[in-house]
Amino acid sequence: MTILLTNARLIDPEALTVTEGSALIEGGLIAALGDMTAPKGATIIDCGGKCLAPGIVDWGVKVGEPGERHKESFRSAGLSAAAGGVTTIVARPDTNPAIDTPETLEFVTRRAAESPVRIHHMAALTKGRQGREMTEIGFLLDTGAVAFSDGDHVVEDTKVLSRALTYARSLGALVIGHPQDPGLSRGAAATNGKFASLRGIPAVNPMAERMGIDRDLALIEMTGVRYHFDQITTARALPALQRAKANGRDVTAGISIHHLALNEFDIGDYRTFFKLTPPLRSEDDRVALVAAVASGLIDVVGSMHTPQDEESKRLPFEEAASGAVGLETLLPAAMRLYHSGDLTLPQIFRALALNPANRLGLPQGRLAAGAPADLVLFDPDAPFVLDRFTLKSKSKNTPFDGTRMEGRVLSTWVGGVRVFGE
Image 1: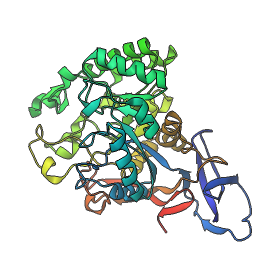
Image 2 (image 1 turned 90 degrees about the horizontal axis):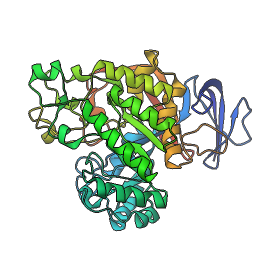
Image 3 (image 1 turned 60 degrees about the vertical axis):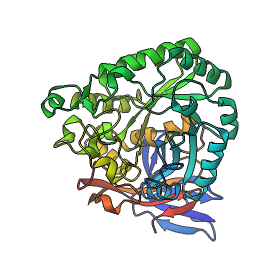
């Protein structure tokens, strides 16, 4: 099917430009961009001057299969992603049981066929994510794993971790780590400071992140592995990351949209929807991290979508489960940074789409001839008040419930097929 999307603002995260023009889709690919007339028989869609960008590649999404399908299924996650402009999900392995064998990976790959968007899977780095014995990285790569991670379970035994990193290096596998000192951060529900003390919430010093990144960078230097930090959330961790990149280490880093849009004061009156891992940081940290995304020091912004049911959230703050859903709120939350003047639209989509696709070796994430026609049409200025019960996710644990937001997804295409919108 041939489709011509006309009268659009084209957001190009590679050239960092915004131009007016059209996009021609043929055979599931972007055939051409710019000013053009419609080929004979093409379906013409007028974008009404709204923004057309590459679909979001959301790295770090938790889906509840296997083990917690009541919280999120591949189908519900896919519907939620399509409504949020996410065309590719990179799913985490912290399921029950963990995705640590080729058989489990094959199972979730088959189940993912229910989703209207593309889904790739990470596999666990150690068996059961217990940090004792590495998984069969080679077999899991052959089965389709795009990266290896134990999620927020930090491998404490450095000998086990160094062996896993060395083996991953020999196979060219990408490893994702969670930079936290596990001893300091264990049991913490907030960031150390006056606010946490006044609220009586168990807290962790931001130095725990710095200690975690320093240890991992030493192992990266020793093994030469390809490595990605899932979330850098404190300003004091940035100099170490910058030095590693300047020294030629194959290192990238990400952050969740919640740590860019919210700070520690949003916990307010013990609102458990704001309990995250790592915990929300200070306003100074938030500002520093936004600047790091603008400069490119932080490469990837994702939702870190973590569905939790009502029973696990309706508990005292320190006992409640961590995490928030974010597939549908990722884009409007990112628009906060656009409207504040901190980031341009191309910078935002560089972090949301281009960089994660490039790091994982995927062809998506770009607005260029020959690229897959995975696209999102959105209005960055459309205001709305978020009602969590309208979310397509099975779980409704969003910190943005009742919040006035701007930025509404109008249509989403995957491979040239519209999966959301009219």
